[in-house]
Length: 340
Ligand SMILES: C[S@@+](CC[C@H](N)C(=O)[O-])C[C@H]1O[C@@H](n2cnc3c(N)ncnc32)[C@H](O)[C@@H]1O
Image 1 (cartoon, rainbow, N blue to C red):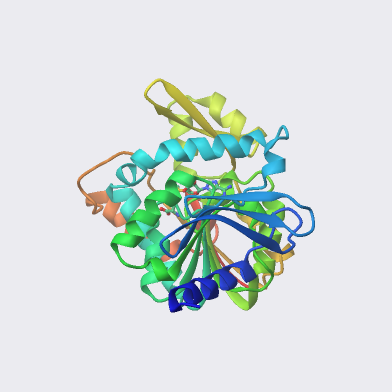
Image 2 (spheres, rainbow, N blue to C red; image 1 turned 90 degrees about the horizontal axis):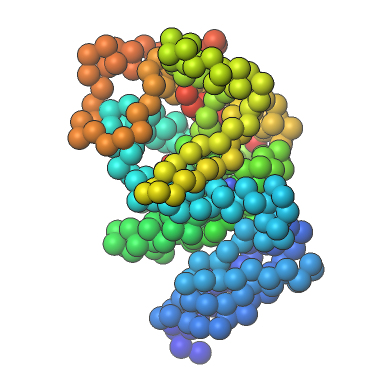
């Protein structure tokens, strides 16, 4: 056997020993149809127990729970996927502004506080901000996203940076993570993937299961009680919004691309709820913080990336009160740091 084939075989066995069927969580059998250089380009993964099959398309396995997509709630997975597939074109542009850069710096600090190491998973990796950070710190990263387009962009980026050996790309949903138990040292899910996971309770339980004892996670999600949004809705007399938000935690994010409109099912969390979900999932220590407490995020391009004037001062105040009640429950995003 040539060294190339041997190298590929080892890589495949490693990956296959970690991923499982997202539905029944049994082992998968690999059927390769086409190789591209040393990579599997087209193939199928078949569950040895429930016989569901999952395609490998252009080198990326699609491990979304395909049967569930055919149910009523299942449509929401397809909509979330389409929403983010179309969002790829503006993803990085919309986040290029002082407010989001401030948020990014906070997220990075929280991630680094967990001392990333070993095998880690990045859930809702998007175009790869955290995946690239983690891979460049020599972690072996499983980059998971529901959007194939996001994964394809990330893969291109990663090859340009020559980080591909540290990263595996998997299309899957945050609530049906297709991994064996206790394989990861760390799990990160930054900027909302868990907001768009209809079966989020199961998702958090699985998150607890796939982490090793002592493993740490950092999650950031949209908060139901985001101070600036509530104030904005009240002063602009958008009382309809307020009533709706008080009634239900479920809403939709909306995005328009040309004439087409997309919407993504969204569950807004409260600090108490997310703490409870993580405790139930087996996390012993759970710390809740907030990001963007005193100013609203902008989702549009601005060449500037530094907060100025009053906002800069508010950012400094926020840095001091982020983890302290009641401020830790008032930000646009909740940032959660937990250990199993
Ligand atoms: C706002 S982006 C953030 C991406 C990246 N983590 C970052 O901070 O730049 C949210 C990402 O979560 C992904 N996502 C949304 N719902 C998901 C789900 N149910 N499972 C996995 N990924 C999901 C989207 O496709 C998108 O790439």
